[in-house]
Image (cartoon, rainbow, N blue to C red; front, side, top):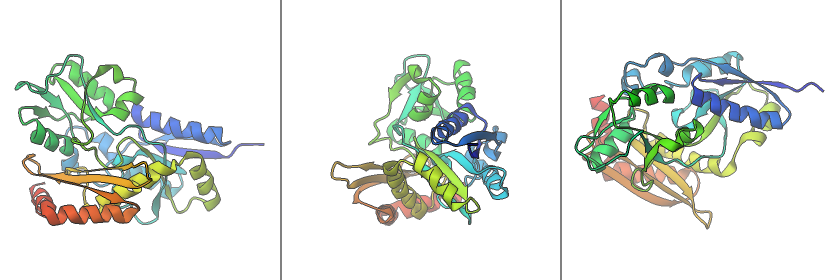
Length: 306
């Protein structure tokens, strides 16, 4: 019996292809014939400016969504943290694969001293820059756009002492031997969705096929937790250019612990709270608490500055 083909849209970087191949392996084991379709996005094409200057919404997803809508691909595979908090009409997140540890790490080919006044770290994330300014005001940062391999090459030139990256990507690219420092996840809270792979679909996909793909790829606890995080992000109206962070974790009693917040661009203000509960309302409630505790002013100041 011929296996049904499923066309998987993906960015063309090594890390994105790892993610797409991971989904392909799950589909292959479930009886499908997966086929990868690499697509270049705006975020891949424009490497000489920061993400905040490009415009944060859909910078790594828009071209993949166009391919979904036109039927060129059946599903699109993304890093969950790259997905805007609100998707265009007709699109939805079908599944989240099981999440890897969402920690941030520093990789380098030398030892790292976070107390050094001469330390320069590479990152293109406004969240990481703001948190570094808050907790380590002695550290200087330099923009480090590009795929992981490009950033590692920049590191080797000596322009920076280390790179701040998501542990999940470092692990998936077999660079974990270069980890010199792990950030405390309670202090250096990651962005919404970090560590997880998301599968996006258009409503043109047949419901029966959609359900079968979900049954093979979706990790229910990961879906539950990131749904809470994304509800928080939607209410905060945050994107790649806003230093908003949020992490949901499952407690032993099946209650969800959600920690989230916002930092000013200069790192001087950091508003952070933790709440417990369940469902997307937890994310909304935490965002309301942060916005009412000074986060609205921080957010407005950031939006007027970018």
